[in-house]
Image (cartoon, rainbow, N blue to C red):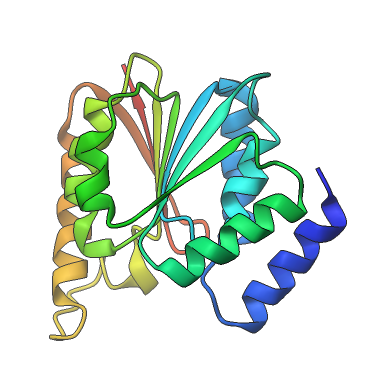
Length: 195
């Protein structure tokens, strides 16, 4: 992996205000990946490919990441970035809406990373559980959403996102098949392990 190129990709994303995984969040996820040693990772929300590239370092040999991106321009950038860092054999990008793509996937994944439309988290969870096996780790980023989720926030603009993130948290906390912890790292990170 070309670390210099990776650093450039990160700086460019920050300059362009493209949301990428925060350093402290990445640190936590990297620890999980080191423990799990995944063969298959599913990522919902590619953006410019930065997190998928970072995750690819922890794959077992012959491991693969499937990642989904809705925006054509971002997917194109992600493909270029993945090539620059020389990990294109490890990462496959599905272009389109995750809501449409997820039901068509029939794989079983070791790690599933959710970082896409906040309003769709409950649906993403349903799909993630369908593609899980015992020991799968489902990680959702930004679950505290600027602190709105745990406050009595009710402004119209973000209401759906906040309501659905609350539903996501309720679902993972109440599901007896999941062992869940929520960390106040980055913008909130939920880690659920399938029992």
